[in-house]
Amino acid sequence: MTDLTHPSPPLDGEAETHTDPPLVEGAESERELAVEVGENLVEVRNLTMKFGGLLALDDVSFDIRRGEILGLIGPNGAGKTTCFNAMTGVYKPTSGDVLLEGVSLKGRKQHRITRMGLARTFQNIRLFGEMTALENVVVGLDARHRTSVVGALLRLPRHWREEASSIDRGMALLEFVGIAQHAEKRARELSYGSQRRLEIARALATDPKLLCLDEPAAGFNPAEKEDLMALIRTIRDEGYTVLLIEHDMKLVMGVTDRIVVLEFGRKLADDVPAAIRNDPRVIAAYLGEPEDDVA
Image (cartoon, rainbow, N blue to C red; front, side, top):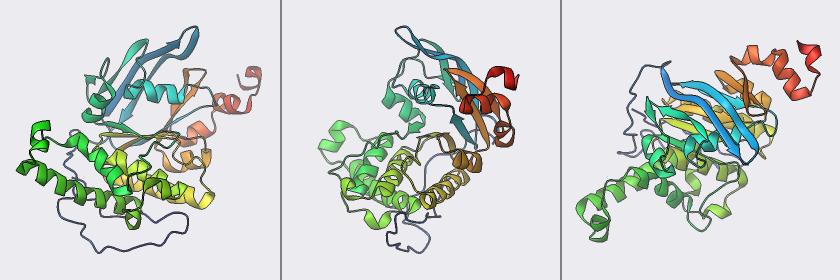
């Protein structure tokens, strides 16, 4: 189980507060690892996405293994975010399928996919600006609550227990991503870097089997990117599997275990970072070298 006892450093020069371990009782994740590290957690099978006459994804297939950090990269317009959206239910794929632990996600609503264990962040931050940081995380925790609507309206004992547990768990997650000192601040009042970390905390609140991060380092300075790399590694060390879209090649090469490269909606390569770095096809895709030069 996840204990979330390794808080990350704060961003943007914000003051750091210290909480002696262990974190509040009941803050542990209820998620248990279902398969051994290295087995396939997610299988993307022949995923195709068309928008009218535009072929955004063309028969894309790859696997995501339990416990790894997988990078999904490619030039602008390669289909990375479209792939994310098709996997998470934002788009309905034209054809193909996505399997989570062998179970098809085809035709399922976004909230159902989240409850099954696939959570994501977005390129453009999507927080509830007028809610506090803690309240934003508690919203994510609601995905795991079992209280019925009637139970919540009547304020039955289970509702009270889950509400108290959500506060504890929410604070633990804010501590984990390094912004617990801002728990009572409204989300719109946080620095850009802290808002990014809050999005990650909210995604973790759903207790995902796969955490999908869509360009989490966008707008970060080099120091913030280093801090983010450390946080992503810590997330993986806590037992989570991570899928990362990112344009910063230094970050991708420094934090991922394996990389899938897309170009014009097709899979171009799938290998470890060292091999991807020296792959002439990937170099050509990013630098625009003529194919004859890299054949």
